[in-house]
Length: 329
Image (cartoon, rainbow, N blue to C red; front, side, top):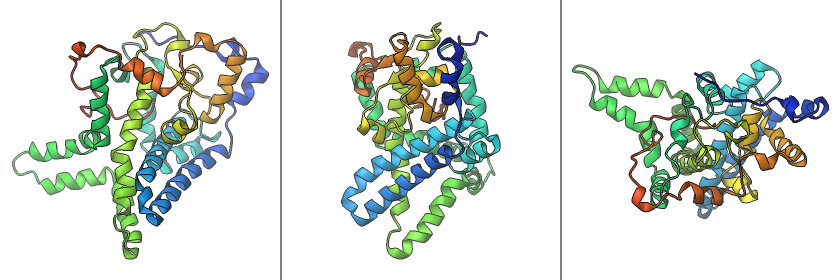
């Protein structure tokens, strides 16, 4: 079982250059988590005041839900705060949670990136696909089908396949107990907003973004990061792709510097807020031409959907079957 090739910071940076890149801030992690929640609340307030802005709010909130997952991912690398206990508190309590399980899984992705043992290889292996196939996937995401398959279909399957005498109510209860934040958040939000006539706020301004925009941009981000990267790629500068993102893409698709994915794989303990600076230094040193990069998300999607239509023979990806539950690479 061969691990993926790695690079050493000393191969690219002097100690004076590397130290500020690797340094973890005692306040930036807090600030980024606070920023994500403030944007969510601000977008929600906008939608409540002007319901015509609900579609815009759904996109903004869905992107910040991804942003919280990105920050949890940084915590999985111990990069959200210099104190590991504080780092894990931020990653577990103030983001979607599941930090320990995710860390154990995700570090295997870095160790075996694009190798046969990579647990995320199934996400990139089907590409390139056809344009029609990509369109179908996006439609399934935006209509909530992907969310249902991943989050709710297992519950209904357990109820349908339960043993004689096994209570459906117990199965539902166990399902709720395993997702306390989701249901507690729903209960608290509805209790707070219902007296003011906004009983629908949680459904429209949290669940709807989570069930539609969030799965779609998660898919597009996955595609940009690893689609069409060669299996068993020997070059550690080409295990992942950095995609240049404009301001609109950073707001709605790629928050918190997640687009600098090649740099992240090269130096996985660099905090997300230092990745852009890392990229600029590598560019100044003439390294970026050797790295896997793309000029924009549209360019990556064109490449990832370049398979001729007559070759569209593969079935659902593991992600679509609900097998893959990871949110960030």
